[in-house]
Length: 458
Image 1: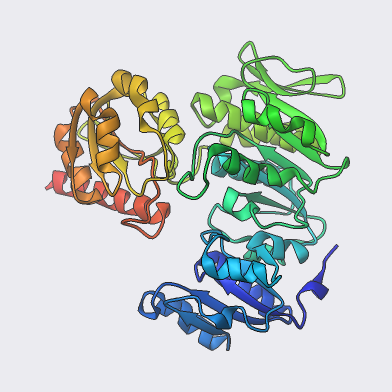
Image 2 (image 1 turned 30 degrees about the vertical axis):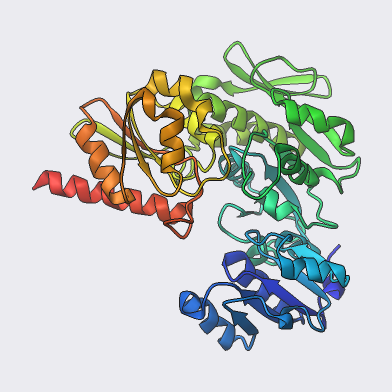
């Protein structure tokens, strides 16, 4: 049920002027709220954002979070990058000001059915794949959330007959109250964002919030192969559907004898041969099994699931082949922002690898890569704030060099490579020490590779 009454006439502060913050500010103003934005970045860093706010007659402050952000407000909306533990927000909570995530506020205005996908790895691929399956079936659909398009910017573009598929991070789920997906998928849990959470338990609890408002009419899609997913099953109120790539299931989607199958209500159907999947790698088999389970409980036709799984080739910045230059393959995996993602990337590339890694550390344990590094790496090129930590963890296993920027890393990796090798950008870290986001980092990588290709042709 659309709840415009929760917004109309309310005085609201939005913390953060990145995509989500601006999108929810526009949505709030459009629906009758009086909005104030605040960001700790200086105004010269936010020229485009503040110009738009002035055009919309939205008040703001920059450089700090002033008392003005709390005074005479009905509630506060947090962009995903803003922790509710900062001092000004602790003061807000002490005086009883409610804190909501951007996805919670957008949910109040959402007439469409919602699918939510969360997990440490595979969220973007799986969310995009579910969207492709829905479109293949002729459904009205938008894919948004942590994928780069804010929920707030699409919520009013999809009717009550349509579906919005949301990629959801732990940050986005922290401050929900009523948010409830019809189908919620949890892919996996592995150590991530330990720079924000005190431990893995706190991080996993934020992920589990995706299920907290579901009812028996909803669906909780869980990974039978993941210990944390099995741990939450007794607390889910929705109908539980498992997926697995390791075992046959009584109910759910699974692999058997090289086939992806779905079994619901005692009926088993073959979706396709695993060899026909458009996305490759063991982790992508799990992503496809999850997408199959989600789509099936939504009543999507088997043929639509099959066709989308065959035609979908993956997403930008996730194991994306950029170029082959003089026999050296360049792969952009900038979306790999935690250690487990790097492990999956190394496992997926058959060629000897020159790995470019590093950035802002998120508390990951890079020693978990040692066995895979011994087997797969030919060289290691390190950048960013975490380069010393990564070098200490695995730099003794292979030739390791540290450089100042990504452009230099690409050139050094190419110098170290031979025909038949692969230069892989899979950072295992956040991008914010050197770039705006992982997309910016990936684009710089691709641009540098293309420049290198042009120089080789001269």
